[in-house]
Length: 191
Ligand SMILES: Cc1cc2nc3c(=O)[nH]c(=O)nc-3n(C[C@H](O)[C@H](O)[C@H](O)COP(=O)(O)O)c2cc1C
Image 1 (cartoon, rainbow, N blue to C red):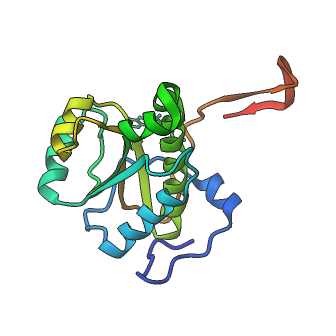
Image 2 (image 1 turned 120 degrees about the vertical axis):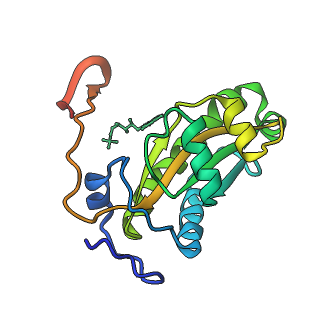
């Protein structure tokens, strides 16, 4: 795979290969992400499954001044990313169509699904992402002028990253179980 996405020509990438290579990035190239690539990223997040219609909102941030402020007020935003996508939930609409439980659970799954799509799509565009949730709701609310009923779920840093070599895996572990918890499935898990 090559880093240069060459706007208009996304790189063909095998899905399994993209999953294997997927990483969170905290160091990005300084150059801005062109509008067209940001539009593809929003499209990828939009294509992620969601429990109900009309609940998901995505704010695309590429204003350098706003991004500089974001770095200052979002403690978990540890990168120099030139852009970010913020997945938000319309909590009034979510409650209308799914009830309280929907607001408290399904909408977070929507957000996670969008993050997964973004991390995969980024690779076809020469970009990388970092999922960031370590911040306070009021800080994001104020930064983006979010109305009270719109909750920021996750901020996703976006920027150009080197194509190769991929940063090493961090070895986060997942345990596999078979039929019943505690009975190992396959190798038992992967780092
Ligand atoms: C729900 C969630 C919240 C996260 N929050 C942050 C964060 O606030 N700041 C950050 O730098 N990375 C954050 N990450 C990224 C993880 O730290 C990252 O996935 C982990 O370091 C493993 O790296 P890898 O995904 O590249 O294998 C978050 C990831 C998830 C799924």
